[in-house]
Amino acid sequence: MEHIAALLLIVGCSGNLSECRELPAPVTVFETAEDCAATRALSLREMSGEAVHVMATCIGLDPALEEDYAELVWSVTPDGRLDASVETATVVASNSHRPEKDYLSQE
Image 1 (tube, one colour):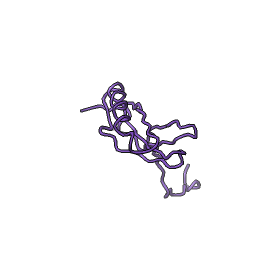
Image 2 (image 1 turned 180 degrees about the vertical axis):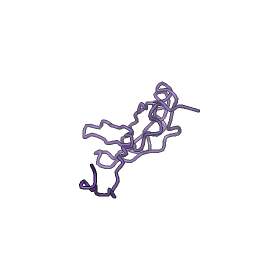
Image 3 (image 1 turned 180 degrees about the horizontal axis):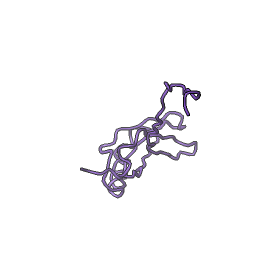
Image 4 (image 1 turned 60 degrees about the horizontal axis):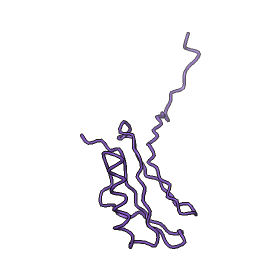
């Protein structure tokens, strides 16, 4: 089974960075960070005409948590920096139906 070590995110923005959207990457997941970085450079050149500002980043992933990743979260700062991370799912177990204890009958 292939382990994913990095994810490539490419984002295109308007001139004033007020409107940004994800752009399709030719390949999005990589077994090594080095492979991602090499594809990142090539993808930036290829996607340069898709938006006024095109930026990309490789997001490192922990292969041990591969099944836990749930959401790609990204934003572009006013100075044009792309911040991105992959968040893990948080699961909280609860039981909405809990029988009341009868303390009088317990000894």
